[in-house]
Length: 318
Image 1 (cartoon, helix red, strand yellow):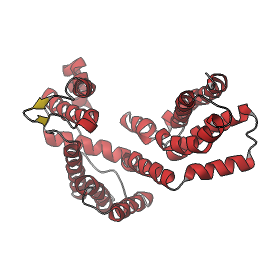
Image 2 (cartoon, rainbow, N blue to C red):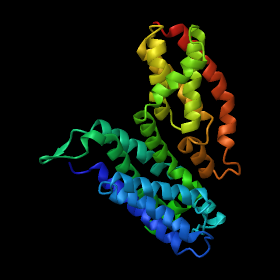
Image 3 (cartoon, rainbow, N blue to C red):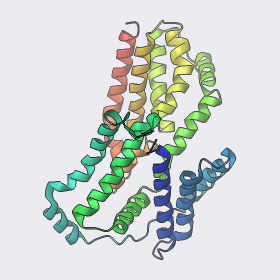
Image 4 (cartoon, one colour):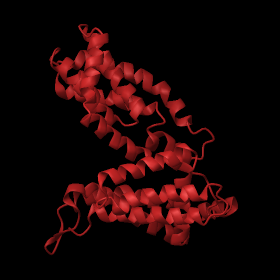
C-alpha cells in the first residue's frame, strides 16, 4: 500500500515533538520543562510505538499521568494574532473559512468509499484495513494546506495554533487513548465476570424490569467512569446483558446490544471523562466553565436513559 496509517502516526508524532520544543523554548510558560517532557513522551508513543516493549510504553504513560496529575502541563504564549486582525481576516474570507473544515469529511468519505480499492501499479492507494482513518489523515493534511493558503498564514503559524489548542486541552488530549487501553485491560482482567458476581449477589434480577434497568444504568455508569461507551460495553454486556437478559429472559441480542450502546452514550453526555465530546468543545469555544457542556447535556441524558430502559423492556424479545 502507498498510504499506510502508520505514516499519519509519524506525522502526529512529529507535530507533538515540535509542540514539545515550542513549549521548552517558551519562557512565558511557568511549567515549560514539565510541559515539554509531557508532549515529548506522548510523541515517542507515536514515533516509536512499534519498537517499544509494552512495559516501556506503559511506563511512559504512567510518567505522563504523574506529570499531568501534579499540574505539570501549563499554558504558554502562542504568537496569536490580535482580535482586530482576526476580525478583519474573518470579514475578508467570509464563508470560505468553512472550506478547510468541510475538506476533512469530504476527503474521508471519498477515500473510504471510492478509493479504498484503487491501485497504483501493483500497490493499493490506501491501507485496506484502515481506509477510513487513512482518508481522515489525508483530509486533515489537505485542510491544513488549504487553511494556510486561504489565510495567507505560514505552516509555523499553523503549528502555533495547534500548540495553543493542545495546551488549552491539556491532559484531556491523551485521555481517549488511555481510556481505550483501560477498556482492554478491564476485558482481559475478567471485569465482566466480576460485575456479574456482584450484581447477582446483591440485586434481585428475578424481576425483568430490574434486570433491564441494571443493564442500562450500568452501561451509563461505567461510561461515566471510563469515559468511553465502547470500553463499558464488553464489561456490562458480559456481566449482565448476555448471561441475564439473553440467557434468562431470551432477549434478542441485537436489540440488547443496540439499546445498551444507546444507554452508554447517555453516560457519555454526563462525564468530563469523555474528553473528546465534552471537554474539547468547551476548550475550542473558550468557555469559562470547562464542564459547561456536561451540565447542559444532563437534562437530555437522564430522560433519554429512562426512555432506553422502557424501549429495551418492551422490545427485547422482538
